[in-house]
Amino acid sequence: MITTVLFDLDGTLLDTNELIADSWRYTYRTLNAGHITDDEIRSTMGETIPDSMRRLLPGIDVDHISTIYRDYQRAKFLDGISLFDGAEDVLRTLKADGYKIGVVTSRMAYTTGLALKHFSIEHMFDTVVTATDTDKHKPDPTPLHMALDAVGSKPEESVFIGDTIADIKAGRSAGIFTMFVDWSFALPPEKRATAPVPDLIVTSLRDIPSFIASGIPAIPYEIT
Image 1 (cartoon, rainbow, N blue to C red):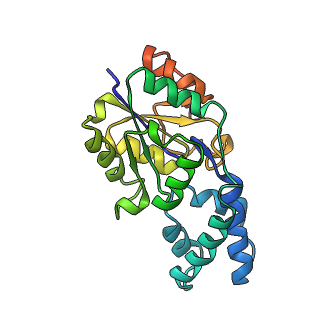
Image 2: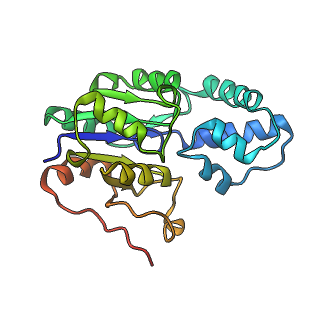
Image 3: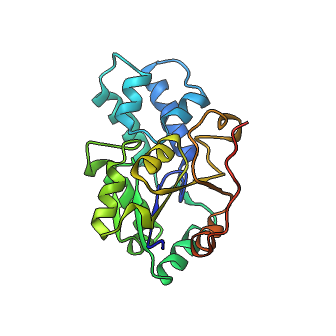
């Protein structure tokens, strides 16, 4: 029986796609680093910012790049984010049904807390694990295990819902039933053929409580 539902934040509950893309474009312009493509931006989603910067902009001081990126994003943050349709209703339903709910994100603690408070949903979560809380990040399963330990749950009684390759890998490595959201910007349909395979795809947040409660399958994730 499922007792615990863990969510990724960015791209799953919280629409930060344009803000993230704009933050990268601003950073590249500021550094005169040329053009960053949409595929390169997608590749950063699910990673920590320093890891992405080391990979995309080698040879440039990561602290310097991080300051540019984060100062821009913090200045635009609350105006540049929104909850995906149905997110608040789904959290409320899961809470009322007695599930333990957590967030496991590669976002830093400051902006994670800012977002949860801005949308008045922070009280719905029994645990929140951010990039600030551990040196190991998705796709490593450690952050998921930390969340489960915090609420006293086991992998086999849990579900994890995310939108990136890192989420799928982390969930499967942790032994948690892993759902992938079909509205993912990080992993659009044309790029899924060679991606790791989740347990289920969901096409709407609003379907998640019924899937968990009844075991009704979502759309199968097919490799063609």
